[in-house]
Image 1 (tube, rainbow, N blue to C red):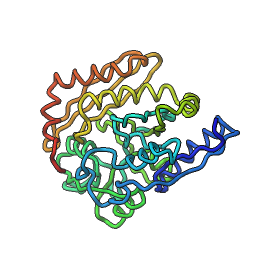
Image 2: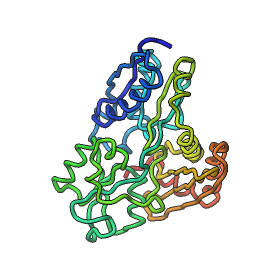
Image 3: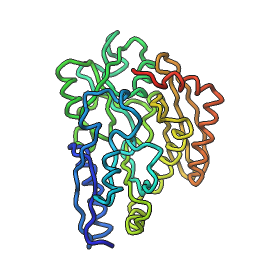
Image 4: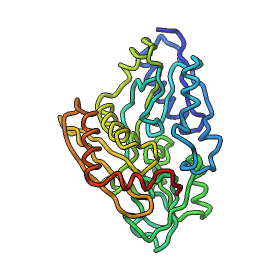
Length: 309
């Protein structure tokens, strides 16, 4: 094993905390190896006032990290897995995932929980998935775009720009701000983003040292869940930024996959669930995708293509 390993990370407070948690695990696995963090600014960080839907393509929070990985400037890149596209550049691979924290969405408001907000209240989110599920739950609410790091989003809420905002619960937990959560949104009505709540470590495919290290770091049950989720998303063409998502969960020897596809301009939502063994995770995602196509998912997905919120 090399004596020093460079770990790439975005420079936000949350990203640093997340990457340091991975570093702590790596130091326990390989105590004789020196690890160092390399902060890299992504386009998504630079243009934090631009709605995500207006970025061309995917990977606005990962491309610069992947370029540094390809160029050998870093040996691994730590991502919030929900930011990592299902199509990974040739020569790179998802090497490991860490154990998933809380996968739920969190609603934050100084007024009430989501069900009790007054008619016409404004909810902030930059996610089509969240927007679609909020409007299916409360069609009277108004959705406004919300960008920026967690601190910026909370500041905008406190300044009165929104009556409530939705953020990944895991992000608030990692920052030690769990007390700010008004309520955890139930996943049966608010299916989280694919990979939400876990971190993915991307490496070069031909780096055998890193592949060996990842085998010790990887959390197997989380891996099975996200493999099914990402297969589902890939099969339905999640790159179009349509409201498509899935959540995998394991109970005993059974992997359950809950899928969701929604319309952008309607309150129509399709949901479907299937089960199999964890070793069939990728196939499970493909099968569920086909089931949802049979239910009419493609018409909702096409509604979202090349459109803006």
